[in-house]
Amino acid sequence: MTRYEGIIPVMITPFKDDGAIDYEGVSRLVDWYVENGADVLFAVCQSSEMLFLSLDERVALARHVKKAAAGRIPVIASGHVSDRLEDQERELNAVAEAGVDGIVLVTNRLDADQRGGGKFLDDLGWLLDRLPADLPLGLYECPAPYRRLLSDDEIRFCAQSGRFVVLKDVSCDLATVERRVALTKGSKLSVVNANAAIAFAAMRAGSNGFTGVFTNIHPDLYKWLLTHWREHRELADELSVYLALSAMAEPMGYPKLAKLYHQRLGTFAGVGSRAVTFDIREKFWALDALIDKIVEGQDQFRRRIAAL
Image 1: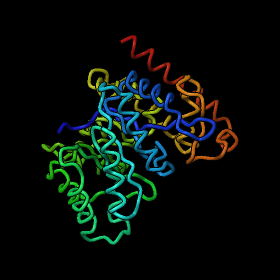
Image 2: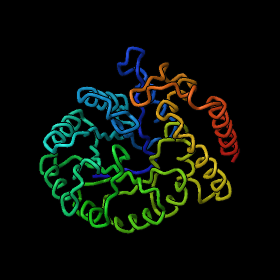
Image 3: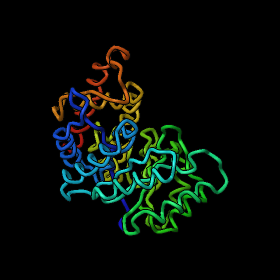
Image 4: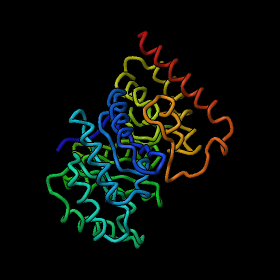
């Protein structure tokens, strides 16, 4: 099994005006990710609004993304949202049968009743016995319905099992990322940070990649930061500040915010969302002006990078 690392966009899901998934838009979005430096695609995640998709839709979306990627980069997917382990087994195996390159377990679904003790590892072991033994697995500390961070012992178990190849780290804490990188050293399990504020520091600490929500806005800039910061440290420092500040727009109606951005690009037409049903322009004043500034900053850094 190969470690999954690098720039891993958490995919958004475009919808048509009638509320159905816009699969043509999904295909164009996959092309955009690939063209802008993505190394792996994470489909059917929280950004994909998986909590608001039926199981049939989750499976169909995973299958479509895999087909659209056409072998250019790997596709991993989650999609288990239920409380009961038996239902999770059915969900995960259904997504696995869609042909993706890995399935991702959401940490808050294990020990869903929050009993503590060894319940997490018991639930994990139960699922591992019922998932394809040859399929790479990931871990996702999804914030919804609540954030459930892994303990050091749980991370050691997953690293030593040989089954896991990526952890989407949502600790948002540099010291925790550093400790986890040390815990997984020499294993197949890569620790990929999802927080923009510590993205650059986490990369320097050995978190080999980024998988935050603004991979939907400028994955190419995160890719440059990851791959070129050593040769251009001063520019990398400046870029890291811009990326962190841009990501502060996330609470302003994401993922609909990212859909507005892609509507501008022409990736797809609709900005509808099942997770965010209100008008984000009405709620967040001057939102379009803020997106203008984010785009202006992108253009400035892209020109500076191109001039190197």
